[in-house]
Length: 432
Image (cartoon, rainbow, N blue to C red; front, side, top):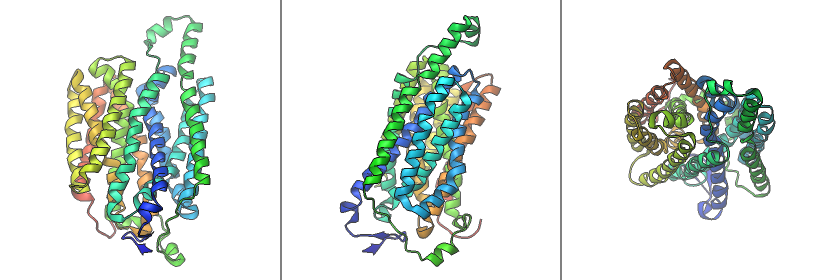
């Protein structure tokens, strides 16, 4: 038995013999929460239509999910410290499934508030899952390969970014849209029938997702997972129990800020992708949905390519390059027209791909016994996904429904990430 540089007990042959199957199970979680997140890109324009919403109201889909991360970050960290990785993962899966099942009555009643509650519950489950799974994937092996391992796991989150929009386009989007004037001109029975049919299309995908989550939870119950313990006494745990004390690590504090802006940028891009494709490139709803799947494919490719490139360069250098290119692509999306807009959006998928796991792994470098607490902060920072899409929707509404102007918001986010990759990542201690 030996102790890795992060302070965790690691058996010499553990990576090959003991950690491979647990790592595969954890990778499946990255895929599942990727499905939930990337269905939102289809869900936002769909519920905008089915529930007759404006841009800011439709962005509350993201607000509900990502505000849950903020609310659950501290409780999730407490669960992780008290009950460990395995039980935290099971709780997260069951909570996630309950939110998915709640889509059925929400669709039956065509009640947007109930959809938002379901999404909030899903977000609570995701927060618990990510708080446990991200550090678990990072420390499930030698510390020197943590970034590589986390990017590999996150690559399957990227795979979900391709699969979810295609599933959503096939099973949720009808391809039929009416203007407000056309709906008003319809007989009331026809209008209500159309809106009810639109709302009902979400039931099968989310019911299926809920069942799958319960099956995975059962699998985790019966499979033995190694509970990696940090090398810390009860006295030390008590001394380090202050939730804010971990921010004495400046590189972690800046990682929390960078993650806040990154998640905001990613969610902005995917949430308004379909409307951006319709307005900027002039494609129809279904075609835009399939292009969102292509975006997901490029996101996935970017994750695998990024994982490969990390063998030849440092994580912070690769992050800086990807952030700089993203700034340029966001500008093209704002000021371009036609297919150029779609190419820029696809490029953003590729170059955003490594940002979350890279920021996460840079943020927990050298934290040892503080890793679980740090994970709570990094998961809490996902609340950026609640803030920035709403701001983007407000910008779009202010700009007379010009979706392209809303992409000024993610452009600013990429500039913050670029700063972090050049300065903020550096490991140093002391109060900020």
